[in-house]
Length: 228
Image 1: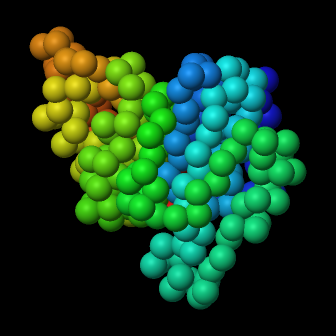
Image 2: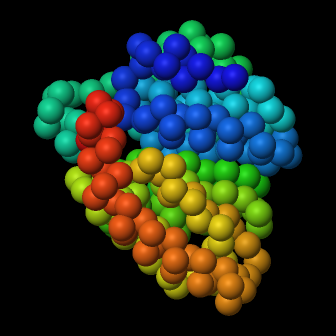
């Protein structure tokens, strides 16, 4: 069993235990012929979860994409940032560096020449709507049918981008089904074409997520998780 607290206790980040375990379990199931993509690695907290899942599963290769300079909010809070060396040290210490290929660049640049079949993508980069939408639009064609997409902070009171992009996709895309929510991460599956039943399930999920949003946020806060 993956020990989230032990593996990530000294790694900065905002991932909850439930989210970390879900990333681990998802990565564990990805077939070896497909790859896992992480958009936004920060210091490697989620990368460690993905890497251990892949290592204990089918050993699908992981591409960890991040320019490692933080977002504007990080830069205002911390000043000049360079997290790359700390990221490398963290994944090396976790024993997963061999299967991780860091791409020190933006998601927009990285996707241009990316030609691997994506079995799972975890999107946790810039949270402004335009950037989340760009990540989704550019990476979605790279995901295989039956592949999974996940968006962090998708019903977060502090960020509207991930929630709005996932809601729009679930309402209007004809190639998305089987949504689920793990703390603040929204998952869904890419499919060749959604059925009427799939569309109704997508709408029902959004209603459920909307109702859960406030109470779920408060639950995480009062349990002591840092979700900002």
